[in-house]
Each structure stands twice: as C-alpha cells, then as structure tokens.
Amino acid sequence: MFKPRLSLSMRTAVARPKAAGSQRSPWAWAGAGVLLGLLVSTLVFAPARWLSGLVQQASAGQLLLEDARGTVWTGSARLTLTGGAGSPDRASLPGRLTWQLRPAASGAGGLNLQLGADCCLSQAWLWRLSPRWDGLHLTFSDQQSSWPAQWLAGLGTPWNTLQMQGQLVLGTQALALHWASGRWQVAGSAQLDAQDLSSRLSTLRPMGSYRLTLSGGAAPELQLVTLAGSLQLSGQGQWVGNKLRFVGEASAAPESQAALSNLLNIIGRRNGARSTIKLG
Image (cartoon, rainbow, N blue to C red; front, side):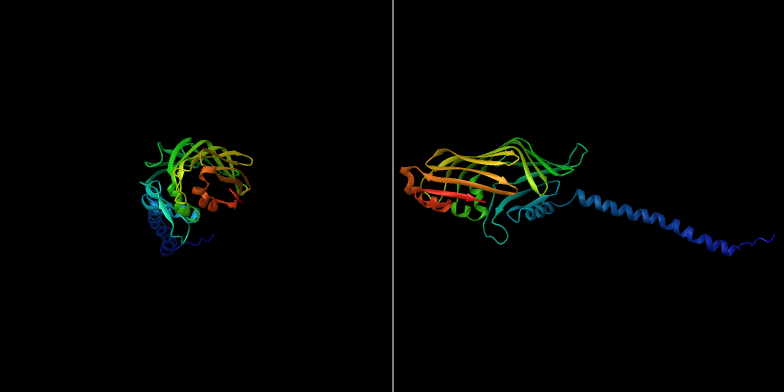
C-alpha cells in the first residue's frame, strides 16, 4: 500500500511553531514574575498618603491624616479635625499619631491596627477588623485616654463658637461594633468624662464636669449626667437604625445664671432659665 511521506522541508515547517513557542515561554514567565514583584512591592511599600486619602473620604473630610509619613503599614501623621470640605475650621492634636497595620495572625482574615499618640494615649490602642459572613466586626481593646477639649473646635459650628477648654477622658470596656444589614450594632460600653470644662462664651471657669455613657445592645443608649459644676446638663438618647435621637436639658445654678446666659442661648432652645437640647 502506498504511504505518503512528508518531505524534510515540510517536517521542519510543522516543527517550527513548537520551537518558537518554547523560546517565548521563559519570557512570559519572566514578565509574570516582574508584574508579581511590582504588585508585592506596591503593597508592601504603599505610601502613608494612600491611607490618608481613605480616612478623608470615609469621614467626609472631617478627619484628616496630615503630613503623613511612612507607609500604609507603619507610619505617622498629624490628626486633624475639620468642618468638612471647604471649611476654614481645623484643629490638630499636639504631637503625631502613629500606627501599625498588620494582617490578623488568626488566619481567618482581617486586620489589626495599633494606634499610639504621646499626647493622649497612655498605651497602644488595638483595633481588630474581622470579616464575618453577614458583615464586618470591629473590636477595641480596653483603653483609657485623654484628649484636649479644644480639639473639637476644628469641627466647625457650634464647636468653633463654644471654644471649649478642658480634658475629655475616654474609657472603653469590651467595646465592639458590628456592621450588618446596612447599620452598626454596638456591644460593650464607652464612657466619656468631660472634666473642668470652660468656654469663651462664659466668664465662669470651670463651668463643670460631665459624663456621657454609651451602652451597647439591640438599641444602643446614651446618658448624659453632671458630675459637678454650676452648668447643669442631663439627657438621654437612643440609636434607632442609624439615627441618634437625643433629648437633653441645660440649666444654670441661680448664682451663675448671668455668667452662663450666653452659653444657654447657644447650646439649645431657650425656655426661661433652661435650654432644651434635641438631636434627631
């Protein structure tokens, strides 16, 4: 039987593409390696200003990491409060905020953020962000910190008018936030003590000390009480969905009504010797 045979030239032509492909393969692997190296390098050495941009966007421009240095993973910046985009009001903490961001060691995903601030934190503050099947879970290590009340003036109205002086002592206990179904759920508690507050709207110094307590649960609650002072503040609030509804009252001791009159006009709706505070 006759069997056709390929000529040498034809066999060479057929084999040639395979040889060309084998020559290109090392270059393809080299290119992939270069791209992978660039990606890893970008992630490892991502500049701190990238994190600054994320914080600014998430806070609608009211919280800034200014003069950010280092990388996304280890860096420092000046922590600044502003009245938002286009606002001339701003105030920065003394000193710098430092951070370390690391993948969680548990292997279940998530990130650990460690914050430090010589001005305000007595020890590192650890935040843990963990993905859950129904959302995100954020936990805070128990902490007690002290922040200057005048920092709030950076937020604009009404804080720029009040120009508060004093110390804000924040304590957290088993505090955790859980994002699910489009809203935050709160567990644990936080307590903010405003100590020896004064304002440029009053000659009375100090006006008093106050405590604001956040209690977690199905409907997180706020409670405001006066610890001491001539300016009396009280109130209660509750989160309904993502909205805070708060009703409070401000009044002055009889001997201090003249010194606190301007302040009472600003912080709430004046009704005789009292002012009503409503949010939400």
